[in-house]
Length: 254
Image (tube, rainbow, N blue to C red; front, side, top):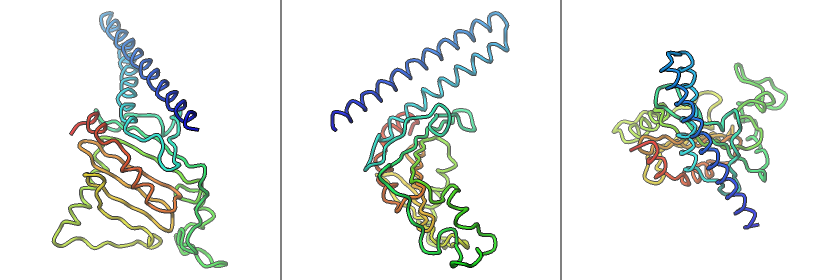
């Protein structure tokens, strides 16, 4: 078994290295084309080549962040990136903003059972759902419904998530912290400012819907570990602790 895991790891590393070499060559080739087109005053063609070079460079940049994510932890295995979709590194909204995402799955786990009449604010058996609430059966097919357990890890330098973490810690340290509150149907949701390693973090978990997240600020990087249809927040905290924060800060800066 150990040999199989080792071979699989080496194959993963080889593929990643080959992919990065290929993308680097493509970026250089497109930059060379852009230069040729500029000299020939073919500006539209130059813009196309520049855009392609940027796309390949963003992939190289964000692939550096994937190295910080563990391949496996307690039965949760990192899924290979798809050609299109959440596994694909992609540019964010602003110039210089990047995001890299990987998903994790655990085939040994079953779908969790919702708390009795609690998930999605379910009404008692035979009764209609409360006004404005979606029926539990319909919720099961929605994100956060009770489908197969999954975890998503995103590393980015976008500050949107960081602001929420910073605000939670500032509020907790305040002499007059703002009281927490629960909206109707959200009574199972808990949010707490915590520390992951030496870094400020914010954990959230909804015991009714069986989903939550741990968001960490590390230098200029922000790491978000999100779980859907999981029994507790423990695996999210463990996965957040398993991130290589030295790599994150090396790539994205202090």
